[in-house]
Each structure stands twice: as structure tokens, then as C-alpha cells.
Amino acid sequence: MNKEQRQIEVLSSSLLEEYRIEQVIESLPRGYISVKQIAGHTYYYRQWREGDKIISNYVPEAFLKGVKQKIVIRKENEQLLKITKKDIAKSTKAVLKAGLLSEEQISALKEGVKNDDVKPEEREAFIEKAFPNPSASTKKAMGYYVEGVASYNDVLLASWGL
Image 1: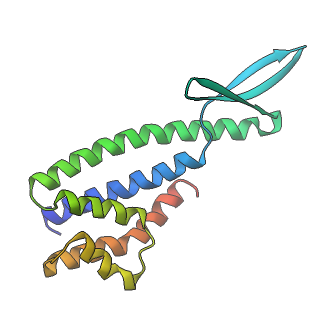
Image 2: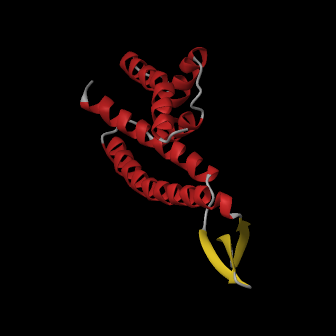
Image 3: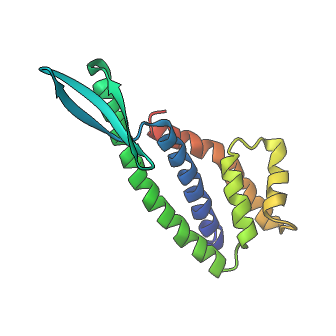
């Protein structure tokens, strides 16, 4: 694999990672746990902001450990998302500067990542959309990346325990 193909692969992998991290974050509770003492009893609440309001939901003690773990995982993924977005910006700049992809092609690649279940029979249409009039080497390279999406998704999901 040459340097140009590697730059495109890094960008597409980072875009896929960003999308998957965003999915994980959306599935997890946001906020923090607040502890309140009322009439000698301890109550736990998950609290988060919606605009200017702080919303509270009671968390039974039996579910407290699980909710705390999910909040921690969400915060870890939010930090990972920040790093991934920086990587994407860096990769995008490199790919654009090298003239490997246009802005439109990068946008199509981003959309393709969101449609990560590209079927083999739809792969050619996806490549044509991302790369109008692609060269044979571009088709081959992009076919590899699109084909690799499913296995890459599986690796990410497994690493996240999903």
C-alpha cells in the first residue's frame, strides 16, 4: 500500500471510529450522580443539564453501580471523540493538501461511513458516488476500504464490549 492509499485509509478509519464513538455516547446516560440525605435516608439522583435547566432522575440503589459505570464510560468516550476529531481534521487536511480527495469526496466518504452496512452489490455504486470517474487503482483501493468496514466495525464493537 502506498503513502496516498494509507492517508485515505487513515481518514476513513478515523471517520468510522468517530461515527461509532458517537453511537456509543448516544446510548449512554449523561450527567453525574448526586447524593441527597432526606429524613435520615440516602437517595441517589442522576442529574444533567438541558439548556438552563438541571434535570434529575431518581436512581434506585440497586442500579447505582451500573449507572455510575455507564456515566464513566460515556465521559471516557467523549474524551476519545475529541481526540478522534483532531485526528480527522489532521487527516482531512493532509488528504486535501496532497490532492488525493476533494471536499465532495470526503463528504461522500463521511456519508458512506454512516452507511456502514454497504452490501457487496452496492459497493460499486458507493465508490462511484464518492469518486466520479475513478481510476482503476482508486476503485481497487476504495473497494478494499468499503469491504473492510464491516470487519473494522466488528473490531470496534468487540473492543467496546457491545
